[in-house]
Image 1 (cartoon, one colour):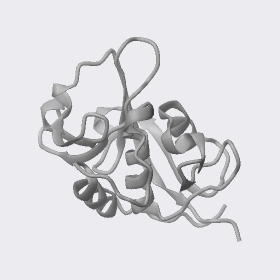
Image 2 (cartoon, rainbow, N blue to C red; image 1 turned 45 degrees about the vertical axis):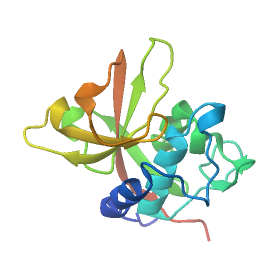
Image 3 (cartoon, one colour; image 1 turned 90 degrees about the vertical axis):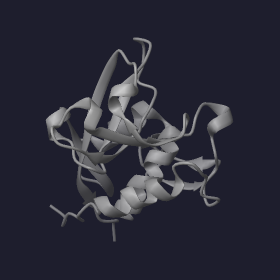
Length: 169
């Protein structure tokens, strides 16, 4: 088992704070072609791990607008990559519940009862742990410090990041 790289939650949240209402010019803005939320989530996650997985199709990476893994921008692919069973480079995590999340983790929403379609990052958790005290940042409806309680959704999932596996040597 390779050594696990700790997830730098502070770096991920700092990135979210810096870019929640802007766009990092190093990444393409997908807002006009389906949304930018999971691209932004991936950027935050990368800021906190520093490791990509360049496996074609099933990895998690961004080179440019046309060279990226589906998991970098796709809500379902992002979740599937994070909770994968195999040990491979890049961040990994588990699905949990409201009480298992921490700052720097991700939520995903299903708004219309069909598919999950939005991925914000948790930037602050107040006490008690209730939706009003879970604050999020996101693109596609840009937000920073937006309470979870202001979202109207049919389903939610909570993605807790455990760390990252190092790049293959």
